[in-house]
Image (cartoon, rainbow, N blue to C red):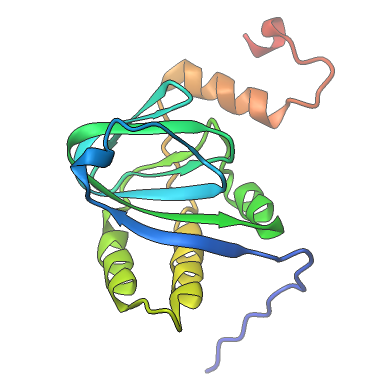
Length: 178
């Protein structure tokens, strides 16, 4: 009658959230910034474009994506509102590996179901619990990424996926990719 699942021993599991923000200020749109930490972004309203190192990422309600340290970014849109959590630590690399998040596979659609959870937790956060709440929301978001990665379209997606999976192969070339 019981269900019991054991958790493997964790090594190098340091993870620290830096902030938990709901960005609503229209004056922040168009301003360029540079990510100092990893950042998970969840679009809660509106639509627009995030430019990440000048590469456009089209965003709308429920789109979730990641920024990596050192990347330049700016948001442009109409009524664009979004949550973000900045984080750092050794566990971040493990989470990215486990859930297949890279600079190429950073975008996830269909996450609007998380918006009420993020909103409720941000409104409940206080000085006494913000570290726990922000880490909980971050980990919950990662846990929902299984099998929801935005697949892109056609040949470009397949080529990118193949190159990522075989980057260490000394025989990888344009010819083998083709």
